[in-house]
Length: 351
Length: 186
Image 1: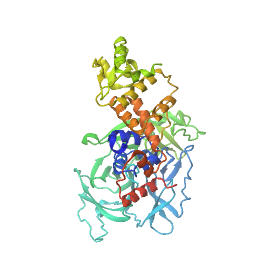
Image 2: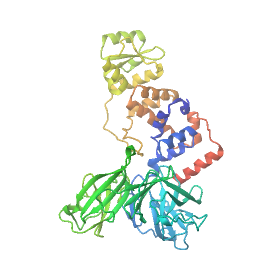
Image 3: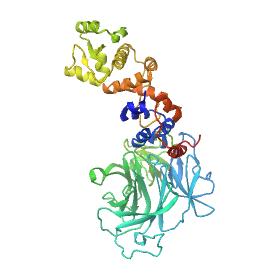
Image 4: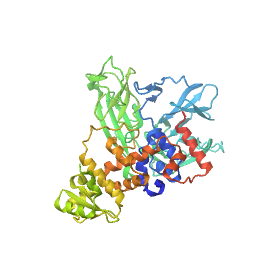
């Protein structure tokens, strides 16, 4: 009568995965082996991820209508809210008006945890948070100019004299919510690449324990949390990185969307399987074949962000800007001529 | 109709098996023989389907050494009941989780079928269903066990399933705090 040691792990996992999130979380408290199963097989993933997407964040919060309680786009409801430094999987990194220490809060909870931080113009703040792996988050401070680094907190006068790029190691200040402390972490260069250096942009994405940060020289730094190494990845070929661009995660991994000659849209998927890194062109469309209807409302039933009356056949004359990717469906959100936010379902080429 | 067939006495079962090629005879680890509809067995169990197709069915009783007589009786009972039931319109569970494939809720008779089982019998049936590749029966039995956990505290779950708490107090407190994070509105 002892399920704990009579059934095989596979069968216990088969039972546990049927539990609603709450009971699944409780089951982690039952015994070590159950917690091991729940964690190793990431059974709680569905719980900690929102089951429906409430909206996307891109300089302000765009709520999808008709999916649960709506959230004000301007975030004034957060006490002391000043500005959003970063966001990651539903967690926001905010600065408060009163002083310069940052706090973060999830949109769902509205309650924040604080961390003391000095804001500076020459660094990019990266929030790293993946509820499928851990309820804890980290904040990375990445110097915009690699030449300036490392600016060690331990030795502020220490500077690198050589300006080779990429540097053999990146020293970053990292705040961990587990310890509540800042510490310095070095990321060692893996694989070679000799290019002109370029400042780091704030275009970045976090996927499967790696942080992808775009540099102005058109390369991406991929920083692995697992082994504290970093790599320099190229951007898709034939693409001008200065173009309007969006880096994001969606159904299958890291995606990159480009605007091409004003009306064209290209979407690439980063394929890192088999030790190879390459960008696969997933979609190519000329938006001129669509036209924006005036009266359209962004509608979303059952989380299927499809809108067929938004865009019809015609001649779209404006320009596009990227708001972001749907976190787990192959949908990109576009800003059409600062006029409408639309969802484009690239697999079916539908708005 | 002939639900009681599954409870078969060895001699009688063998006679029927020889007379009727539409059934197969299964032998439990403790040597008891059970008869089951060949069609139902092939439809509900990938393993039996393979054995039937591969001709490795023994008319004198196909040995299933991993399955005790009580579990095998339940398996056969389930197959026969399934063969006689009229499937209702598919009721796909609006399941909570990404982890779960769409699951058709148990039918009324399936619910009753697993409800009457003791814990031991239920767990044995899970193993038998798994061994025989009976996806539906595995679904129904695992679903039943998960129902027994829902809404219970860790202590209650340990009691129901006779599991030893191998955490220290400090560890438990730490895990609870992670829970508090997941379920802040409690």
